[in-house]
Amino acid sequence: MTAQPEIKFTQLFIDGKFVDSVSGKKFAVINPSTGKKLCDVAEGDKADVDIAVEAARRAFKFGSTWRTMDASNRGRLINKLADLIERDAEYLAALETLNNGKPLAEAQFDMVCAVNCLRYYAGWSDKIHGQTIPADGNIFVVTRKEPVGVVGQIIPWNYPVLATSHLQYFVSQIVMCAWKFGPALAAGCTVVLKPAEQTPLTALYLAHLSVEAGFPTGVINVINGFGDTAGAALTNHQNVQKIAFTGSTQVGKLIMETAAKSNLKRVSLELGGKSPIVVFPDVDLDEAVTICYNAIFANMGQCCCAGSRTFVHEDIYDDFVKKATAMAAARKVGNPFDEGVEQGPQVSEEQYNKVLELVESGKKEGASVTCGGNKWGSEGFFVEPTVFADVTDGMRIAKEEIFGPVQTIFKFRTMEELIERANNTYYGLAAGVLTKDINTALTFAQAVEAGSIWVNCYDATMPQTPFGGFKMSGQGRELGEEGLHHYLEVKTITIAVPQKNS
Ligand code: ADP
Image (cartoon, rainbow, N blue to C red):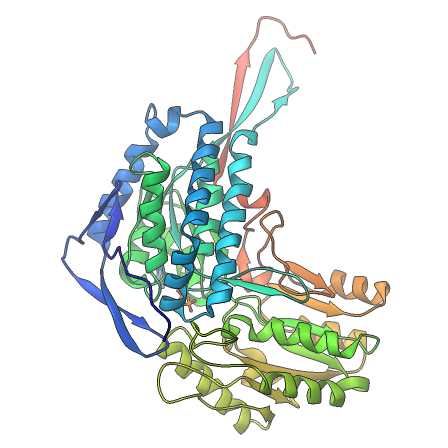
């Protein structure tokens, strides 16, 4: 195994300092490549969340360093944080690979994604402004966009970020942090972040970098812990004004319910998906097979917007399946630190078992396994790259989010039937369409119910472009200008004047 990075931070980060949890409890962080413990980290719960929220409130108070700082200086701090990630990118990438099992080359690119996202939002800091409004009467009206306040941010262990049709890059905890910190800090909020319990290590290192960048204490806080304790305490908190959540649809529903019952805090949600990627017969077949392969296999299939339902036109179905099978069979699985490895382990034993259970259900329900279909190796949480052909819409593998390296290939005949079937899901995160015909592409793009449509590419998500789901894939959008709105309140200031001059 390649040299592994030293784990430097394992406590909670509150009010500018690393501290133990109030309870003194810790939990184990597991290396998914071996199934063995990497280290213990402090386990935060309600008591720690209360302290962190109080620190974030102090940092947000009228007259605080953060609230009196020029907006342009907020942007400079965010840029400084990006500089520091760039400086320590090699270390951070290795830490990410160690903790979540993704191939090192992908983790290295994740750092670029995180930096790009932070720089994009750094630029917004002093460009967030309201309007003057020609309202009726002897009045002068302005609106201000103000930060919403203390924000709770709850993130999972994975997320897709940026790709083209040929190169796919997938993110990790560090990019999730950038997606969350970037807009919140640009807007002027203060944050309490709860990383995923499986992957807390890079978020803690980022907290350390925030001190070096010069953020005032209390602006950024990180509480490791579990969802039903630390996560629920944040969601329930009366002094948290917004929750930004990324994770499962099931937990997303809980978050909305808890937010409503507590203080009606604002909620934005990025949830699951079962995204269709459709292949028309006029494509270059090799190119289409490659795009579909990357859409599902990248990041071990652990992407909310993975192209997890591959619809192929009947005229090219058999050829497509043959080529897709060959491509999956050639995928190099192994130690994510080894050069050339394309697929590491699933992030946790729980996810690994879930993927294998769904694969078994596919076999039982009559889909044909043309590649893989089993666990891989003798230790760690590895799954063989798997391809199912002859998948029908009623099967569990067609309906449930697998979150694993499992391609399911469906056959379709007409556009009409395709649209019906593509939309026949509670999800609506993303969709892809591969064709040389602009009319075909636009018909599908307009008809499909999803937040991101990629034409002749997939996973092309960038800091500048909004990302999020229709239907049960989420609420609101992240990234781009849209991503800022969730962190802002609009204040209308109406001033009586002796005489108007309209
Ligand atoms: P995934 O399936 O991607 O792990 P989850 O929705 O289970 O997604 O978890 C995503 C994040 O939500 C994690 O940080 C987890 O700890 C947190 N979480 C889980 N349950 C709750 C809850 N009841 N309240 C708040 N956060 C939760």
